[in-house]
Image (cartoon, rainbow, N blue to C red):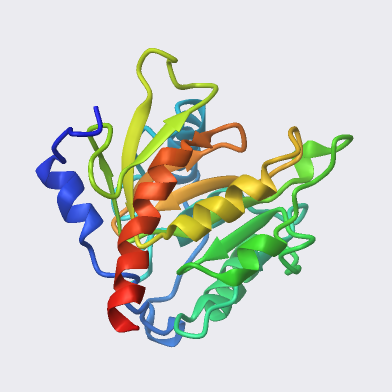
Length: 242
């Protein structure tokens, strides 16, 4: 299985550029609350994604206007006055400004990563490690992260850059393999550490700018062999620079 050739779609996802810049929120069209029918359709897609981790779904077309990244849409769908929200810091992306808009529209209180219920990330952030994991007594308070990715694609097991997923919601005789563009092996290693004390942990929804989504529930395992393969190209690049 390790010799499986990548599909054309997966190969394109693996080679996608890392996190193109998001336009400044000041340049965005005026955003409004999601229409009830749109929010309901988005909610169903998100729930379906979490019931079948790694399965690629799609948010309703045009759920947010261009150039707003679609990763903002799940926050607009799920956040409310009872759910604290936070942005994972980025030196290159306007995530804090985007969070402020979402918080205004949803009336959600702004919190820190360590106390939030929903988190927003426009790229890979070191603050991932600080996310709220809840507790054994209240695992439902663990954060759900809406993580922007450059691409999502199904892949053959063992394809270059692919993640082999196992766990609840994934048939044991048919593990799922996907490529999530832009994220490093370090991201998934940190996520595994956050989810090492089940039932506390963090759930992740991967979202492309055009609205493709895939869920990684806190019970989803990214196989170690896939992480090692994902880390190898980065290690080779560092060696070349040195």
